[in-house]
Image (tube, rainbow, N blue to C red; front, side, top):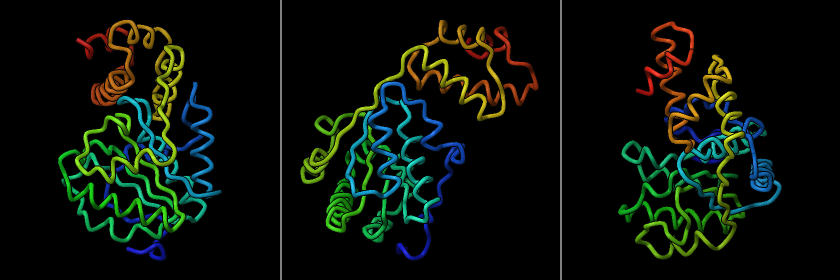
Length: 235
């Protein structure tokens, strides 16, 4: 694969609702500066190496896929690599990415214990930096604490920009749930959302998991989304 072959690296992964993952649909909350930086990267204004981290459910995958989407729409050459699907990926795909405009590596923590992948990403990091290209890496833990065995890679993660995604307030979580439901072509009433917020853990990973269950269950049962219906799912 070369940068001339396609505007988007042809990697066979399913992006959940990828057509909805753009930077304008990310409710920024206290992440205004981060969002501005990502828009700059997606516009290819100047090269960046960015390490983006935050707990599960804070929108890292959304942001990386959104960067790729915006960049590809401007005919830039990009690649998105979800390391969560490591068993489905050949490390050889890293060999042809150094000339792309932007490479996004998602879920870096998944290569803990995989020395070959850590070496490969070290070489890719060096190549992209030397070629003045952009690299965006996401993880659920800071670069100082991520459990990687290859010190060359671990040290490079802190060389450039490091940003932590700030977790949303309860008010913003409600807006996010409403938006995500609307993008999936159903609506959640204020009463239903308030019930969910009161009854389950308020971290975004749990809330998004509940949203997935509501989406699938309401389609299967062809039922209106009410508090009793959601209560059954939670229980």
